[in-house]
Image (cartoon, rainbow, N blue to C red):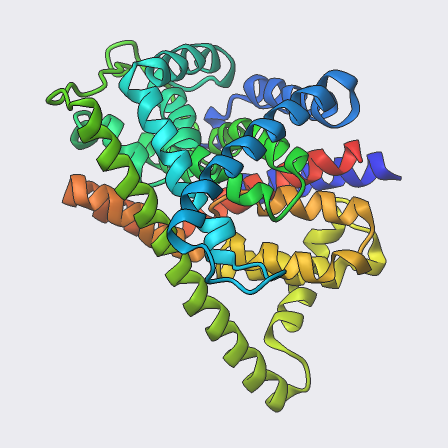
Length: 393
């Protein structure tokens, strides 16, 4: 039964991608099938093998150590503000982003990140049927984040055609940045965070290959990371510390606004209709929850979390999931957890369009015009990742 539901999920997801495709005859089915198989293999390794368990435990332990180091700095500045036994979200989940950002800055400063991104980008381009620039951008998105990644291609940005820009933006919205992984691991199981990170990378290529197929010539496919004035080590540290703090503040501000807004809308909707707005959306998303492998008895609860993520962001949805985890099966928690690990939500349209517009106004306007289609594609990526995870749990 689980296998049949998975096949149905693939058919539905691919059909939803196919109906909006701008080049149905150019779809590279061989690349799509190859990457789906890769997703299945990687999901099996990460979720069902001893090697995957050791790997995820190793990554989780690294982040545990990093979060402990981050806590030293946070306690020095904010120690004593929290009541005994309390869990201040801003300090425990968001502020560690500052320290993770610093480590990313150091890795970039010494050239390690550039080597990793170029190497993985070259390998991925042999598998995904797309250009090296798209592959480079996808790996960079998973490290820098959905807005910062475009700085790494700002020299090429004015010359990138619309179809290639869509693929790059889909990767940016489908993945999550390395600086925020630690925050996710405090809210959901690390194994689901790592699994989603890996599967989303390929999922973005799969959906883009269906919605937006094209060929890239050798002349077009040039990676040239811009060379800027060499910063001193301490200039770089200061910049990345401030960047990490800005991300923490922005996410915190968005959470305050979104949580308050959802609370108000739920209250008004419940008074008028008798059920909360989130629950009503849960019924809309319930069929999608079912096809990705959620048990029928839990599809409304799962659909509510999925809808919350789309309308607000993954943090709000993760908090909601934590509140009802005890009432859900471990299978549902796992599938929904990987669905939540991406930037696919309405606010990300503005974030990505704004980031691109800051570098090139014309291209920023282009991104804004295909914003809804971008969110549509990135949401299909999350569904695909959840479906692949479902067959393994």
